[in-house]
Image (tube, rainbow, N blue to C red; front, side):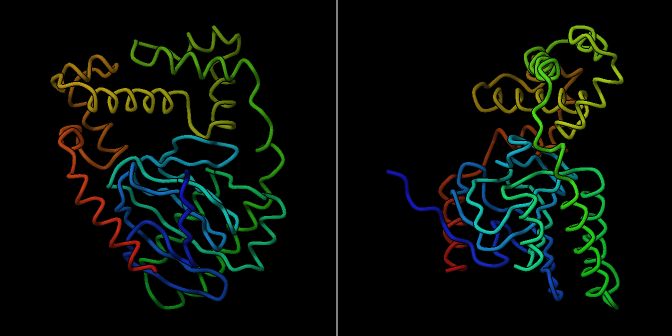
Length: 286
């Protein structure tokens, strides 16, 4: 029997805010994720909002890009969205923009379900985040304008986001995933798909919001994560098995994705203390 999703009121997220500012139509909050991946419950957001992934690997149920996404990704969740979006580690950082009902309705008319964006949408959200931490003078007016700019930009990005990727592109992605631990050249992937490497790169970013090389690194990091959870092999051996040149390259990529070193991830944290933190967070919102 499944429990009811936890309901989160306006501006509530599974993360501690470092800075918050409210404007006429938005609330901006720069947050650090505290709840571990496995402990984030299924939950419902009362209000529409954007989430900018600032640091770490974020798992989303957004209809057009389900799965893991990285820094610079922007997710729009309409009011009433129920999901289990969360970070893969305790070191995630995100920028949340809560949207008032009138503006949210304009976006929801185009995006009735959660959707993910990169590119210009991510750049606008990052500008807003920098403004939040900048000079306080006129920050509310500037942030109000940036929020409206983001809402308008996202509302325009509707048509191609709902198209399914071509079959050859899905095969290319699967080929990268299945061969991620081997030495892999994108020209070989493009040749198998029957397209030019430039066309592969352009289509890959359009549909999957990352380059083929970024996706390859993501697959290797996921492989490392599996090995760290299931084996006691030395990190140098884990690096080679996952396709990295050496332990140093592995550590750099893993820290960038999860915010911690592979060794720290393997050691982990006490589950009961993590559960206590989750309970405390939840109780503070009730």
